[in-house]
Image 1 (tube, rainbow, N blue to C red):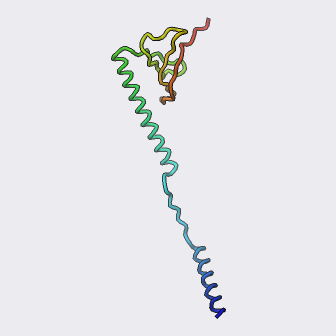
Image 2 (tube, helix red, strand yellow):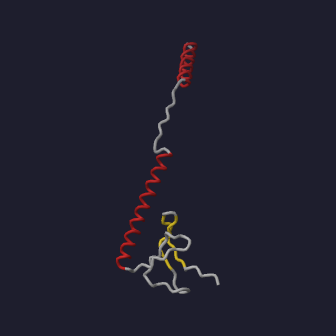
Image 3 (spheres, rainbow, N blue to C red):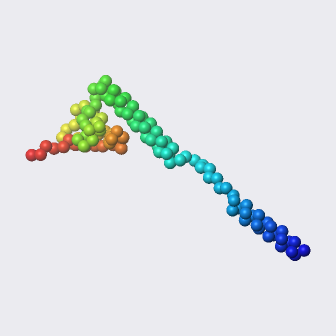
Length: 119
């Protein structure tokens, strides 16, 4: 009887070992791949850029229609234009201001004075 139980346990152990040794492991990715992540981030950046560009086009159109925008470019970031009213600037008292745009992307706001000429 003991030999029979021992033989059954040994048979199960051998079957378990052989079964797990030959088992095939299949990896199923859940979620996006790195390239899909990059594409999604790029699409979101493009959408945000288009939104900002449309907003700037609308502001520029509104300002050009009303003739009320200063429009002076920042001396380091020429895409950044002053959105203050025309005639607002007085040197050493006022500053220009507008959305800071670097490489076509809005990166916050900027306020600046016109650079002084070297004397």
